[in-house]
Amino acid sequence: MIPRYLLWRLVQVVPAVAGILVVAFVAVHTAPGDPVLALAGEHGDAAYYAFIRAKFGLDRPLPEQLVVYAGRVVSGDLGLSFVHGRPVAAVIAERLPATILLIGTALAVSTTIGVALGVLAARRAGQPSDLVLRTAALLAHAMPSFWLAQMAAITLAVGTGWFPVQGLTNARHAFTGWRYALDVLHHLALPALVLAASELALTTRLTRTGVLDALATDYVRTARAKGLPEQGVVRHALRNALLPVVTVVGSRAGLVVTGAVLVETVFAWPGLGQLLLSSVQTRDVPVLLGLFLLASLTVIVANLVTDLAYAWLDPRIRYE
Amino acid sequence: MLRTPGGAVGLGLTLVLIALALLADTLAPTDPFASVAQPLSPPSRSHAFGTDDLGRDVLAGTIHGARTSLLVVGSVTVLAAIIGVAVGAVAGYRAGVVDDVLMRATDFVLIVPRFFLAVVVIALFGAGMDRLILVLGLTSWPAIARVVRAQTLSLVRREFVDAARALGATDTRVLLRHVVPGALPAALVVISINAAGVILLEAGLSFIGLGDPSRMSWGYLANNAQRFLRVAWWVALFPGVAIALAVLGLNLLGDALNDLLDPRASRWP
Image (cartoon, rainbow over all chains, first blue to last red; front, side):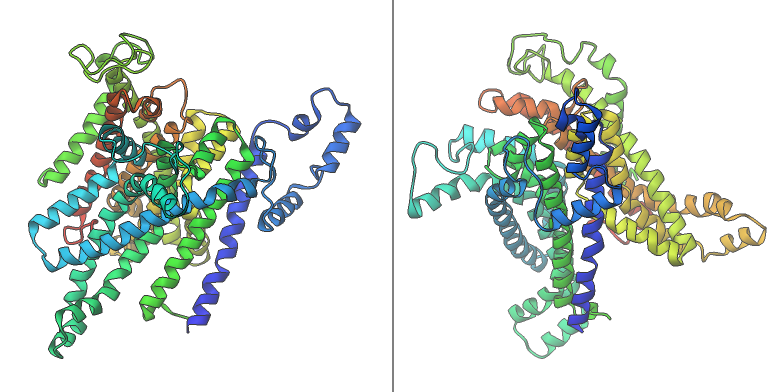
């Protein structure tokens, strides 16, 4: 029963979100420094301190403060940025599109090319290609994303001049229309390819193994015996072959977001990475907390989507 | 383990990392923060990896960076292994409600984005080795717990565990003497793969300027290199190569351990 599984899986999101909120709350409350002193200054009298304490609800018991905090966050109120003086949610929302563009492009590239290469490698299964793939996957996973980004910037941007070194658009020309889109694409290419690299190697390997395993099953033999053309057979097999790909890509959401943030700082891509870097330098805690909550939510949603995709691909999963 | 080329390379790289960390003061006796030559001089005979913008030797920095990296990875790994083995063994041994609760907790910690949590903690508590190790250690154990639990579930059904119980061994003794040693080899695979991830995390955090400022680290060097990508490729190249080799070594070591334990199933699909 799909609805039942869906419902059960949705219910599981609640404790996960609650847990993340508790972690954020505990981190803030165990940190050194008294918020009352920060707000009221060190020379206030006891009555003024009590006033401030009451005004911001700091005199309430901790569990009550936690509930108030959780309620605010759930309703989208992440507090004010120390530096920007504006709501954290607005500051983050401003930077979000650039990061989504980067991650979306990278995942689209790594998944389509990875699956295609994986199918190709499976159909020509042999030792040399396997060794190349395995080595590529190992190397791609060992290289820090920021370093790969720096190397790409040094060689392909600074060295050859083929790509811009940084930014989202050309600062010297304000393009409009399709030329603007091309300009963004030109700037996007390097960061997206760097981010895609480590996922690409993994997706290719997973697809290759998945297809090889699926091609060895009885239902594929039946399909062949029925006289299904080879292309149809592969399409048949691919659905099951993609199960591990879906699982692994979904489980790497946190790593992909972290990678994106680091790659962004190298290419000065105006997304969440730049925001994180500037907030680290100014110790803008509300923004950093907001980014932590957003990253957590991304992981939770990615896990949810992964499980639902899995259930859709493999009907055996839809248990009670 | 040395029979496969991957295992030999992995063990070799890991040993080199440990040797660099232990012998850093002998191999690079000068202070890695000291200015020793012209700023931004390219690799030469006297300074094989060149120098950075303050004339600091990149080779010395890379060698001393190994020490910082190993210190973080080692401490985080010990902490994560203790928690992971304890949680996994108790969950698998006790079963029932205890198992449910511990595994729910494990699933939860697995979704916490470690990098972003570490950023928040360091921003709140200030930069420092201790808090970095604590926050990464407290969040890096779930994979270990899962493997140890699975091992424990199969071990508690074995005759030697029954025999120990029949002889009157307490639960603690059964766990520590019979279950944990049996689960450890499989745990080692996850522990080494985990350690590789921690190296990357630590490097990423130092790269955005959240490392311990009093210690030379690979991420710090890479961060410093960022401003000179156009003029000094060597400042960026070498620390990154060191990180990649350290991570590669631990991953290969994990793979080789895995093949050794279960030659049929490769960790890599």
